[in-house]
Image (cartoon, rainbow, N blue to C red; front, side, top):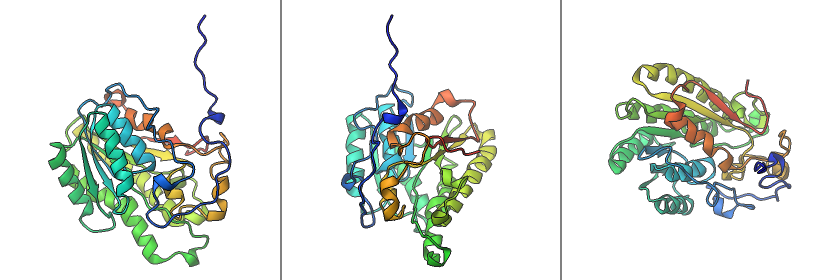
Length: 296
């Protein structure tokens, strides 16, 4: 009898402590140690998203990068928004998309700027010839131990990037999205169980949860599904760009039930499913990928 192929989730990927490291803004995936696994070598598609036209925000590294690679290998063309200064990471992702035989449109935009959400949608539609799927994934996360140390400019920027840009992007995209289209947001376990040093970030993620469910209720009559993914501790450049107190970085993710941080590639199949026709009866849901931490 053939034995099943099983893997122990506790021993997958990086299981040791991380070395102390930080980067200037914007943090680049290429300079991380170890580099996150975004499925560059391991993800294999099966045409779940054949000829879909997708806009992904924050698609140059981390979770967005894993989603972009997976979607391209599932047959989708990709418009990729990224923060200016992250061109090196974005161009690497573009190479993977092109190697999958799919079209890519690179969109360097700072989502803190008014009108950025509108412009990326219009350029995605023009570059891809249409738009049927949104992955709203861009985020700012900067740790501050005390509210007295939290600049109001940071609070405003975090809300603008993390949630206000979603409103602008969806408002512009609504007229283009057809029945059967899908929207997938990235929220966080922080929206359900906030850490004291991530007060502004956690608040925006609670808002994204509400936004996702409200939007799903509005768009159901259009035949457009809206769902969210709530990651836990995932090894991405966000953590090195002020996202975690530097002294806590070596222990990042070790408190999870799996006793390690997650890798971006481990989220990609859920994003694929939520965009695909297989999720035809799934809307207004938040999927936790947290290594065991509850989101309910």
